[in-house]
Image 1 (cartoon, rainbow, N blue to C red):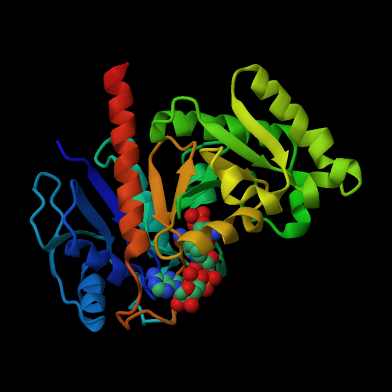
Image 2: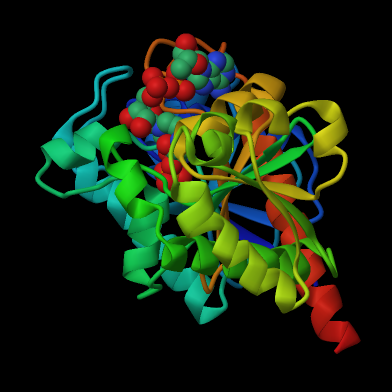
Length: 330
Ligand SMILES: NC(=O)C1=CN([C@@H]2O[C@H](COP(=O)(O)OP(=O)(O)OC[C@H]3O[C@@H](n4cnc5c(N)ncnc54)[C@H](O)[C@@H]3O)[C@@H](O)[C@H]2O)C=CC1
Ligand SMILES: NCC(=O)COP(=O)(O)O
C-alpha cells in the first residue's frame, strides 16, 4: 500500500500554495494530500502560470495522476499575494493541527510542511517560533531536534530559534546529551544507519582553544561525549566548527551536530539551497519541510523553485520506508 502524506500549504500570502500545486508535475510512489484552501490553491497555480486540476480529498478515494487532492480547510479572510494577514494565522495553524491529528491517528504516514511566517503568527497573538517547537508542544514531546539534510550533508542543532545571546546558557550537558540521543536514535530508526558516526562541533572559536577562548567544550560538551562513547556511540569532537565542514572531516561522519542555528545552517544552505530539507527528529510522527521561507517577493510570479518541497517529500518517503523496513526486520 503506498503511503499517504499530508502536505500543509503554509502561509497563504507566500509561495507555499503554488509550490504545493506543482506536486502534480512529478509522479510519486505515494498519495499526496495537500491541506489548504482549495480555491486559493487553484487560483495561485493559475496566477503562477501553471493551472492545475484540483479535487477535494476523499479519504476512501484513490490518487489520480495529474490531479491534486486537496483537503479543504478554508481561509479565515481572503489572502492577498505577498501581503500576509494575521487574521489567517488560525488557518495556518489549523493546517498543522489537522495534519498532525491525521498522522497521530494513522490517516497519514507523515507530514511535509510548506513555509509559514513566524512573525505574522506572533502578530496574531500566538507566540510561535517555528513548526519544530509548535509540533513538539502539540505532541507533548519534551525535546525534539531540528536537522537539515541537503548538499550531501546532515546538520542537526542543539539549539534552534534563540537569540544568539541566549545560546551559551542553553548549551548544558543535559541539552547536548538529550539531543545526541535523539539524533543517534533517529539516524538508526528513520534513516537506516545502524551505527551512525556523528561529528560534534564546539561552541567557541577553535573549540575553545584549550580553554583560552571559552570553557563550554571542556566543562559541558566533552564530558557528555565521553559518557556516550562509553555506551558505544561513535562521536568525534568537540571539533572547531570552522574546519569541521572541510570535505575530509565531513567524510568521516554521517551527520554533524552544531550547537546553534547559524553555526550549522549557513553551510548547509550554501551547499543545498533549493534542494534542502528540514526534518524534525524525536517527534512521534514523521515531519519534513522545505528549507526556505515564505518568499513574499516571489509569490504569484511562478518563479519560486519547487525543488526543496520535492526533496522534502522524497526524504519523508525515505524515512517512512526505513521505519517500515526496520519494523519488518524486527
Ligand atoms: N519552513 C518554514 O516554515 C520556514 C519559514 N521561514 C520563515 O519565512 C519568512 C521569510 O523568511 P526569509 O528570511 O525572508 O527567507 P525566504 O526563504 O522566504 O527568502 C530568502 C530569499 O530566498 C528566496 N527564495 C525563498 N524560497 C525560494 C524558492 N522556493 N525558490 C526560489 N527562491 C526562493 C526569496 O525570494 C528570497 O530572496 C520568515 O518568517 C521565516 O521565519 C524561513 C525558513 C523556513
Ligand atoms: N531555519 C529553519 C526555520 O526557520 C524553519 O523552522 P521550522 O518552522 O521548521 O521550525
